[in-house]
Length: 353
Ligand SMILES: Nc1ncnc2c1ncn2[C@@H]1O[C@H](COP(=O)(O)OP(=O)(O)O)[C@@H](O)[C@H]1O
Ligand SMILES: [Mg+2]
Image 1: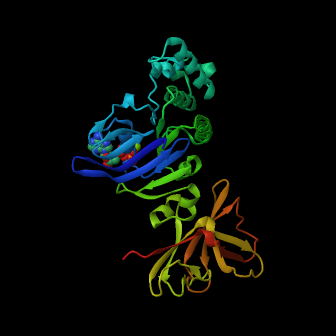
Image 2: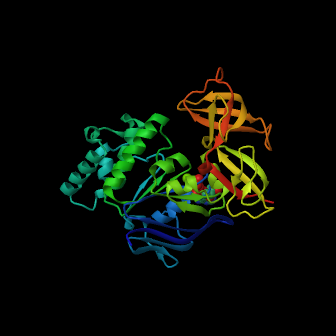
Image 3: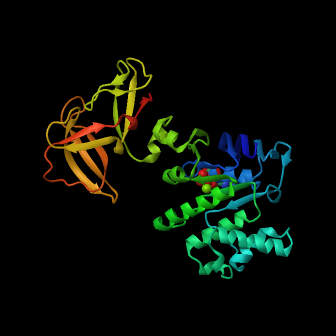
């Protein structure tokens, strides 16, 4: 199969084990995001794929060619990889055109020139071809770095936190442009990031890595968000509401009504997490199935508000929760507030001893 295969990769720096049996596949045309906290070994994994770090255990195959295995170690320049770092690492003394043409030294001048101009066009940087990098904005530098990575028509593109240096507005735009260029190229791309929303936006598939250097869950963005395999994965997307108790007949009793707890057995201690967007608020007279609550606070974040409330009755009375609602929330003149739970945003886990 075309694309990248890493099988059973382990890596240690001295006595410190960083990567713990990582296996992954990036098919041609797909973008796979490795999502994990700082220091979990993401850059190390990319460097092993690129051949910049010597493989210790496992194997790396690119387009059916074994590039690293216990007795094989192809140098980076023979792996046909495009690499883009967080700081872009453009050559400051070369023009944009020369930066992009740099990796095309094996081709004759005319072919190299035509190819460099072609990718510059693709990333929309043709009019800046003769400028030096310091005259460009962060977003433009990023596009040049992408063009340079793609110019030699690599079999695999590796992106290491490629948008981390950009401000929020710029980042959204550059992300979208990068994704569109990569999709046109139909190259296999492995990108690493510590930003869950970035991974959700960019990825065909996400691999969530934990601090122990293992992959905790792999799946499409919607699998990771709606079926988080463990508490750590569920909590990636922000603070969670939590209700703990003992499972009975497949559910946990709560002030919001019974919450399904999957296959937790009777008498098992469970922890149910509810996303803030999974608590829905309404106002006015009695609401069927609604739980009466007292609103404590409301903070407008821009496109949504975080509303703190306290449950008035039942098993969780007095407990505080946070709901995220679209738009602004008016604290006055709404009458009684009621809370409902969206079952798709409820995630039960066994309580750790
Ligand atoms: N060359 C090195 N020598 C020793 N330790 C290293 C080296 N490179 C990285 N590390 C350590 O390995 C761990 C993983 O690093 P890294 O792969 O850069 O993680 P990430 O990219 O996920 O932040 C960190 O604890 C880091 O300090
Ligand atoms: Mg890193």
